Length: 107
Image 1 (cartoon, rainbow, N blue to C red):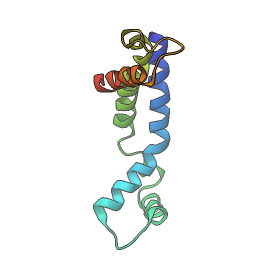
Image 2: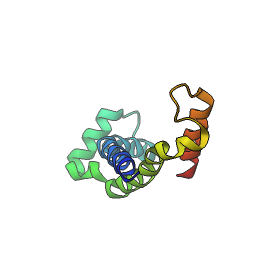
Image 3: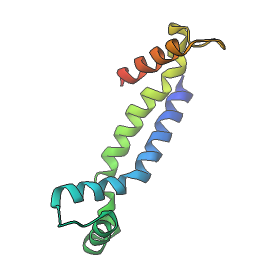
Image 4: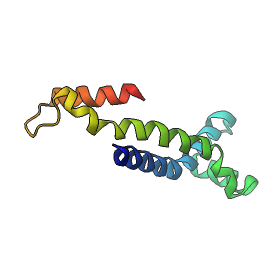
């Protein structure tokens, strides 16, 4: 179980780290509403004014959240499958959906 929790947490943490700069730019677009500046223009303005560090705003918190929630959601799926009968080869979609909904709701 520890392996699944670790793998889930690391994968979601890495995905969060790679997509965080886009989220930062998106939030800047929403907050500042600088005319009709697009994603690229807003990102360029952000980098020229604040440097590359401007793209990493909130990265630590976002990665910590991703590792925690992602680790729980993805890591608990395999151990929970037997409780819903989703661990058999011929398990139906319903039992798999119930197992995944349970792990998603846990986080």
